[in-house]
Image 1: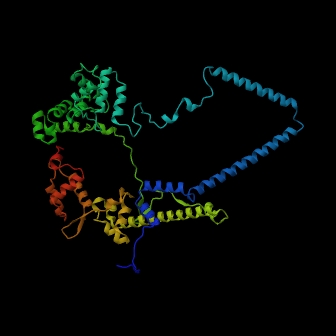
Image 2: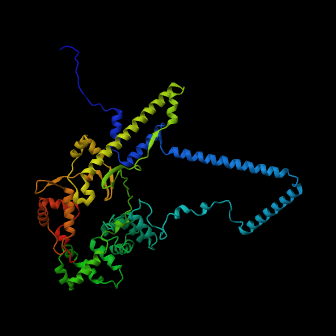
Length: 517
């Protein structure tokens, strides 16, 4: 054991701050990138928006107009002074003019004093009395209580209606607990005996003699609120509430009420023969009854879900020019920034050492940030162009033309690592004539074909969806039949794979898809 010096040559990858920043910007979405750019603009004085130059030109134009107005005013004042010095001007005319002006002023004051009562204040603004900002953005059919906030829930909507309902204190307290027990779908999730027990525990002196029938009466009152069907305890009761609120002369209303009350399980099992026999109606009449039931809303609370909509800003745009698909970056996805020339010019001027060093550091950071942005845009454009080149048939004919594609294929084509491709395609969106898609959407696994080729799982799901949409509703296609039809088209897919793809498309099995029409 002894100490010694050795020389060793090797290669290693060091995560420099510049590389870390480039990787960070590469994996950001468009909204996150806008936030990052805004933070850079706030923290670095040498970065500025490219639009500021246009604003400066507009300001200079305004200054020129103001100077011209001043020159015009000055010329008018000279003309007035010359008129004042003229021989035709005398003191009597000035006196008469002043008298006329005073008389007109007195007349105006008297007129306003007669028009406005003394008890009204005349120094208030229009906005103090009428707040136009609250009503100008509302529609003509707006009513108090309409959901205007994205955070408003179904409880808020029902509580607003409860405040307009005349109830006793006991019934109002029960109704409040019932409303709090309604879920987002609009169903009552708590049993009535539990609601009564909760009321008795909170206010035993008021609910000591209250019985379960009174709680159910309050529930029926809440079930008359909007939306129709709210407060139901199960699907059958939800449909019955909506049917009872229809006019009595509605066709097939009585038969539909009987069906949802006694035979809803047979309708779920598509046992139409038994339904025809139990309801004592013909098959075409049963079709009309089912159509009336299908017009109802099984989840009334969902129409009040006002979650804020998240709009997607596409990073790249795909267009067809001269018969070829081209990819361009979306200039609206992120603001264009540049280095402020005024501050950068101060570096060469004589100033304190601390000030020069601060400006040099900020200038270097600004250049790194701009270079990282440029690298992100170039990488995104290269990857998107390669994806479009491989998915031309999808752009031409739709999902059925999707080709199998994995990250390794794009990585080899653009000579980058798969991890880089994964970062580029995550939370990045492409605007195409067929809609907005995430770049991850174009990657899918492959399934073998009869001729030894491969088919994309996305294309297979599109074919399954097409076959089911064209099936006979009286005899829907089973998973085995779908597998046989795909095999005839040269795609070898197992029945369990068909079932997995069908469930991914939210398509029920064949026994639940059976219809009379």
